Length: 224
Image 1 (cartoon, helix red, strand yellow):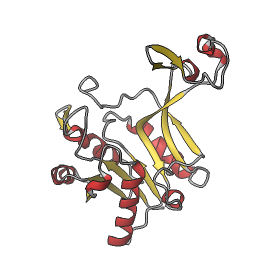
Image 2 (cartoon, one colour):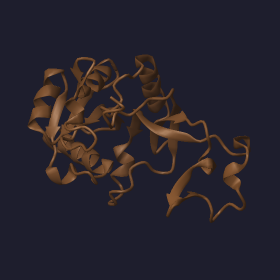
Image 3 (tube, one colour):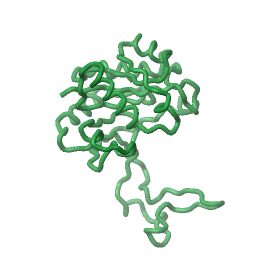
Image 4 (cartoon, one colour):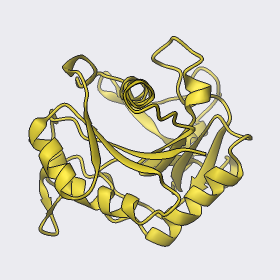
């Protein structure tokens, strides 16, 4: 099985300018994900996908292989599948390297526990034929049924059309536990998502969970 850790690091970012190379613990944010990936012995290649030559130089300094991706798939509204397909096709065409499993490590999660990371990778390998993808998630205090949106000037429940009464005030014990995805670890299979032309199909409907502690994504100055 050919396994590639892929670290997406586009130049544009809204919350923090050049977020992926902002200093965190005296190192560029990007460095921490590269360092974690290099500790995984079952990984064949640590790959950074970026649209920035500056980011490329930094990533190569810390031991990653880098491919430059087109600007058209590096926009604010670009989907994850776009850089995954680009990386898959690039490696297959340029290096005759066919990826079986992508391990997605976003730079916004710099403090990964290496033991849990190895555990997640082993689970992904062991269950390779059973899932369409694997996502790391953490447990939320409240179930989804107790979440609100603001509609006009007032709070409105997300499930008003499907649930009756003041369901958002019912005890949380009545509802299933809710989990939120985080940036700790994801596993995606090209043999699954390359079958679909749609840019929106990448995870599939057999998403295996890997439950972690809470990891904060670094998306703003407050997070940093």
